[in-house]
Image 1 (cartoon, rainbow, N blue to C red):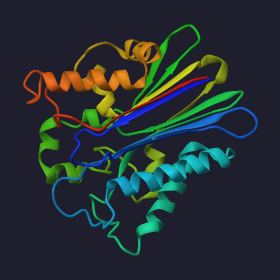
Image 2 (image 1 turned 90 degrees about the horizontal axis):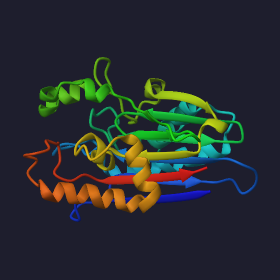
Image 3 (image 1 turned 120 degrees about the horizontal axis):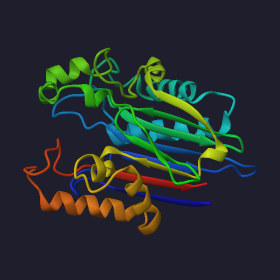
Length: 260
Protein backbone atom coordinates (compact mmCIF):
# COMPACT_ATOMS: atom_id res chain seq x y z
CA UNK A 1 0.00 0.00 0.00
CA UNK A 2 1.19 3.50 -0.87
CA UNK A 3 -0.14 6.57 0.93
CA UNK A 4 0.80 10.20 0.25
CA UNK A 5 -0.61 13.37 1.78
CA UNK A 6 0.29 16.96 0.94
CA UNK A 7 -1.35 20.21 2.00
CA UNK A 8 -0.31 23.86 1.79
CA UNK A 9 -2.09 27.12 2.68
CA UNK A 10 -3.12 29.47 -0.08
CA UNK A 11 -1.14 32.29 1.54
CA UNK A 12 1.54 32.27 4.20
CA UNK A 13 -0.20 35.06 6.13
CA UNK A 14 -3.22 32.95 7.07
CA UNK A 15 -3.65 29.44 8.46
CA UNK A 16 -4.47 26.44 6.32
CA UNK A 17 -8.18 25.65 6.70
CA UNK A 18 -7.92 22.23 4.99
CA UNK A 19 -7.57 19.02 7.02
CA UNK A 20 -6.71 15.48 5.98
CA UNK A 21 -6.01 12.08 7.50
CA UNK A 22 -5.63 8.43 6.51
CA UNK A 23 -6.19 5.83 9.22
CA UNK A 24 -5.35 2.13 9.01
CA UNK A 25 -6.47 -0.56 11.49
CA UNK A 26 -3.92 -2.13 13.80
CA UNK A 27 -5.15 -5.54 12.67
CA UNK A 28 -6.99 -6.79 9.61
CA UNK A 29 -7.69 -5.08 6.32
CA UNK A 30 -9.18 -1.74 5.39
CA UNK A 31 -8.75 1.91 6.13
CA UNK A 32 -10.26 5.38 6.11
CA UNK A 33 -9.52 8.57 4.18
CA UNK A 34 -10.78 11.99 5.28
CA UNK A 35 -10.33 15.34 3.50
CA UNK A 36 -11.99 18.58 4.60
CA UNK A 37 -11.84 22.03 3.03
CA UNK A 38 -12.83 24.70 5.52
CA UNK A 39 -15.05 27.42 4.10
CA UNK A 40 -13.42 30.83 4.50
CA UNK A 41 -16.13 33.23 5.69
CA UNK A 42 -16.42 36.71 4.20
CA UNK A 43 -15.09 39.50 6.35
CA UNK A 44 -17.23 40.00 9.42
CA UNK A 45 -18.72 38.03 12.27
CA UNK A 46 -19.41 34.31 11.87
CA UNK A 47 -20.72 33.84 15.39
CA UNK A 48 -17.82 31.61 16.46
CA UNK A 49 -14.90 32.38 18.77
CA UNK A 50 -12.77 29.48 17.47
CA UNK A 51 -12.33 29.85 13.72
CA UNK A 52 -12.35 27.51 10.75
CA UNK A 53 -9.08 25.58 11.43
CA UNK A 54 -10.40 24.63 14.88
CA UNK A 55 -13.63 23.43 13.30
CA UNK A 56 -12.01 21.32 10.58
CA UNK A 57 -9.66 19.70 13.10
CA UNK A 58 -12.56 18.79 15.39
CA UNK A 59 -14.80 17.53 12.59
CA UNK A 60 -11.96 15.69 10.84
CA UNK A 61 -10.89 13.98 14.05
CA UNK A 62 -14.44 12.81 14.73
CA UNK A 63 -14.83 11.51 11.17
CA UNK A 64 -11.56 9.58 11.30
CA UNK A 65 -12.35 8.04 14.67
CA UNK A 66 -15.94 7.02 13.94
CA UNK A 67 -15.22 5.78 10.41
CA UNK A 68 -12.56 3.47 11.77
CA UNK A 69 -14.24 2.31 14.96
CA UNK A 70 -17.88 2.09 13.82
CA UNK A 71 -17.76 0.09 10.61
CA UNK A 72 -21.38 -0.88 11.25
CA UNK A 73 -22.46 2.74 10.60
CA UNK A 74 -22.96 4.03 7.03
CA UNK A 75 -20.80 7.02 6.14
CA UNK A 76 -23.75 9.42 6.07
CA UNK A 77 -24.59 8.44 9.66
CA UNK A 78 -20.95 8.92 10.62
CA UNK A 79 -20.97 12.40 9.10
CA UNK A 80 -24.18 13.28 10.96
CA UNK A 81 -22.76 12.03 14.27
CA UNK A 82 -19.47 13.88 13.70
CA UNK A 83 -21.27 17.14 12.91
CA UNK A 84 -23.34 16.74 16.08
CA UNK A 85 -20.26 16.01 18.19
CA UNK A 86 -18.43 19.03 16.80
CA UNK A 87 -21.45 21.30 17.31
CA UNK A 88 -21.71 20.17 20.92
CA UNK A 89 -18.06 21.11 21.46
CA UNK A 90 -18.80 24.82 20.92
CA UNK A 91 -22.53 25.18 21.39
CA UNK A 92 -22.10 26.97 24.72
CA UNK A 93 -19.69 29.58 23.41
CA UNK A 94 -20.77 30.21 19.82
CA UNK A 95 -23.86 31.09 17.79
CA UNK A 96 -24.36 27.93 15.74
CA UNK A 97 -27.46 29.39 14.09
CA UNK A 98 -25.29 31.95 12.26
CA UNK A 99 -25.40 31.23 8.51
CA UNK A 100 -21.61 31.53 8.35
CA UNK A 101 -20.84 29.39 11.40
CA UNK A 102 -17.64 27.44 10.60
CA UNK A 103 -18.23 24.78 7.94
CA UNK A 104 -16.40 22.56 5.51
CA UNK A 105 -16.63 20.43 2.41
CA UNK A 106 -16.16 16.70 3.03
CA UNK A 107 -14.58 13.74 1.27
CA UNK A 108 -14.80 10.48 3.16
CA UNK A 109 -13.79 7.02 1.92
CA UNK A 110 -13.63 3.70 3.74
CA UNK A 111 -12.38 0.45 2.33
CA UNK A 112 -12.29 -3.17 3.42
CA UNK A 113 -11.75 -6.57 1.88
CA UNK A 114 -15.06 -6.46 -0.03
CA UNK A 115 -16.19 -2.86 -0.49
CA UNK A 116 -15.03 0.72 -0.95
CA UNK A 117 -17.55 3.24 0.43
CA UNK A 118 -17.49 6.93 -0.42
CA UNK A 119 -19.13 10.20 0.59
CA UNK A 120 -18.66 13.65 -0.94
CA UNK A 121 -20.32 16.86 0.24
CA UNK A 122 -19.78 20.13 -1.67
CA UNK A 123 -16.95 20.94 -4.05
CA UNK A 124 -14.05 18.71 -3.06
CA UNK A 125 -13.33 15.73 -5.34
CA UNK A 126 -12.77 12.00 -4.95
CA UNK A 127 -11.25 9.98 -7.80
CA UNK A 128 -11.63 6.20 -7.98
CA UNK A 129 -9.31 4.31 -10.32
CA UNK A 130 -10.13 0.78 -11.45
CA UNK A 131 -7.48 -1.92 -12.06
CA UNK A 132 -7.72 -1.31 -15.81
CA UNK A 133 -6.92 2.39 -15.36
CA UNK A 134 -10.39 3.90 -15.75
CA UNK A 135 -10.82 6.95 -13.49
CA UNK A 136 -14.22 7.96 -12.12
CA UNK A 137 -14.75 11.31 -10.42
CA UNK A 138 -17.24 11.48 -7.55
CA UNK A 139 -18.54 15.04 -7.42
CA UNK A 140 -21.23 17.04 -5.64
CA UNK A 141 -21.87 19.65 -8.34
CA UNK A 142 -24.57 21.72 -6.64
CA UNK A 143 -22.25 24.66 -6.05
CA UNK A 144 -21.27 24.61 -9.72
CA UNK A 145 -24.93 24.92 -10.66
CA UNK A 146 -25.31 28.17 -8.71
CA UNK A 147 -24.83 31.18 -11.06
CA UNK A 148 -21.49 32.89 -10.42
CA UNK A 149 -23.23 36.26 -10.17
CA UNK A 150 -25.23 35.01 -7.20
CA UNK A 151 -22.08 34.05 -5.30
CA UNK A 152 -20.58 37.52 -5.72
CA UNK A 153 -23.17 38.91 -3.32
CA UNK A 154 -22.59 37.89 0.31
CA UNK A 155 -26.29 38.17 1.12
CA UNK A 156 -27.32 36.02 -1.86
CA UNK A 157 -24.59 33.45 -1.16
CA UNK A 158 -25.74 33.25 2.46
CA UNK A 159 -29.32 32.62 1.34
CA UNK A 160 -28.14 29.72 -0.84
CA UNK A 161 -25.87 28.18 1.78
CA UNK A 162 -27.29 24.93 3.18
CA UNK A 163 -30.62 25.62 1.49
CA UNK A 164 -32.63 23.78 -1.16
CA UNK A 165 -31.80 25.14 -4.59
CA UNK A 166 -28.36 26.14 -3.31
CA UNK A 167 -25.48 24.09 -1.96
CA UNK A 168 -24.65 22.18 1.22
CA UNK A 169 -21.66 21.99 3.55
CA UNK A 170 -20.96 20.35 6.91
CA UNK A 171 -21.67 23.05 9.50
CA UNK A 172 -23.78 22.60 12.66
CA UNK A 173 -26.84 20.71 11.39
CA UNK A 174 -26.42 16.90 11.27
CA UNK A 175 -29.34 16.62 8.82
CA UNK A 176 -27.09 17.94 6.02
CA UNK A 177 -25.39 14.53 5.92
CA UNK A 178 -28.41 13.20 4.03
CA UNK A 179 -27.51 15.61 1.18
CA UNK A 180 -24.09 14.05 0.58
CA UNK A 181 -23.25 12.04 -2.53
CA UNK A 182 -22.66 8.47 -1.35
CA UNK A 183 -22.00 5.09 -2.89
CA UNK A 184 -20.32 1.70 -2.66
CA UNK A 185 -17.97 -0.04 -5.10
CA UNK A 186 -16.69 -3.62 -4.95
CA UNK A 187 -13.12 -3.54 -3.62
CA UNK A 188 -11.90 -5.57 -6.59
CA UNK A 189 -12.91 -2.65 -8.85
CA UNK A 190 -10.80 -0.01 -7.06
CA UNK A 191 -7.02 0.12 -6.96
CA UNK A 192 -6.45 3.82 -6.19
CA UNK A 193 -8.18 6.67 -4.35
CA UNK A 194 -7.28 10.33 -4.82
CA UNK A 195 -9.02 13.07 -2.82
CA UNK A 196 -8.57 16.76 -3.67
CA UNK A 197 -9.80 19.99 -2.18
CA UNK A 198 -10.85 22.50 -4.81
CA UNK A 199 -7.57 24.35 -4.39
CA UNK A 200 -5.72 21.30 -5.74
CA UNK A 201 -8.43 20.38 -8.26
CA UNK A 202 -7.76 23.74 -9.96
CA UNK A 203 -5.16 21.90 -12.08
CA UNK A 204 -8.13 20.29 -13.86
CA UNK A 205 -11.09 22.57 -13.20
CA UNK A 206 -9.53 26.03 -13.55
CA UNK A 207 -6.22 25.78 -15.39
CA UNK A 208 -7.28 22.90 -17.69
CA UNK A 209 -3.85 21.28 -17.63
CA UNK A 210 -5.41 17.83 -18.05
CA UNK A 211 -8.35 15.63 -17.15
CA UNK A 212 -8.99 13.63 -13.99
CA UNK A 213 -7.09 10.60 -15.29
CA UNK A 214 -4.11 12.85 -16.11
CA UNK A 215 -4.29 14.32 -12.61
CA UNK A 216 -4.16 10.91 -10.95
CA UNK A 217 -1.33 9.79 -13.25
CA UNK A 218 0.66 12.91 -12.31
CA UNK A 219 0.30 12.23 -8.59
CA UNK A 220 1.19 8.57 -9.03
CA UNK A 221 4.35 9.41 -10.98
CA UNK A 222 5.59 12.57 -9.26
CA UNK A 223 3.86 12.64 -5.87
CA UNK A 224 1.13 14.62 -4.17
CA UNK A 225 3.20 17.76 -3.60
CA UNK A 226 3.98 18.00 -7.32
CA UNK A 227 0.32 18.59 -8.13
CA UNK A 228 0.14 21.44 -5.62
CA UNK A 229 3.40 22.91 -6.92
CA UNK A 230 2.02 22.95 -10.46
CA UNK A 231 -1.16 24.66 -9.29
CA UNK A 232 0.91 27.28 -7.48
CA UNK A 233 2.97 27.88 -10.64
CA UNK A 234 -0.22 28.44 -12.66
CA UNK A 235 -1.58 30.80 -10.00
CA UNK A 236 1.67 32.79 -9.96
CA UNK A 237 1.60 33.09 -13.74
CA UNK A 238 -1.88 34.66 -13.58
CA UNK A 239 -1.97 36.44 -10.19
CA UNK A 240 -4.91 38.70 -11.02
CA UNK A 241 -7.10 36.00 -12.51
CA UNK A 242 -7.18 37.60 -15.95
CA UNK A 243 -6.61 34.46 -18.00
CA UNK A 244 -8.24 32.09 -15.47
CA UNK A 245 -11.04 33.60 -13.41
CA UNK A 246 -11.29 32.31 -9.87
CA UNK A 247 -12.62 33.43 -6.51
CA UNK A 248 -9.20 33.56 -4.82
CA UNK A 249 -5.82 34.21 -6.40
CA UNK A 250 -4.45 31.24 -4.43
CA UNK A 251 -6.36 28.74 -2.30
CA UNK A 252 -5.52 26.15 0.34
CA UNK A 253 -4.70 22.91 -1.50
CA UNK A 254 -4.76 19.33 -0.24
CA UNK A 255 -3.97 16.08 -2.06
CA UNK A 256 -4.49 12.66 -0.44
CA UNK A 257 -3.48 9.58 -2.42
CA UNK A 258 -4.03 5.94 -1.45
CA UNK A 259 -2.94 3.00 -3.60
CA UNK A 260 -4.78 -0.04 -2.26
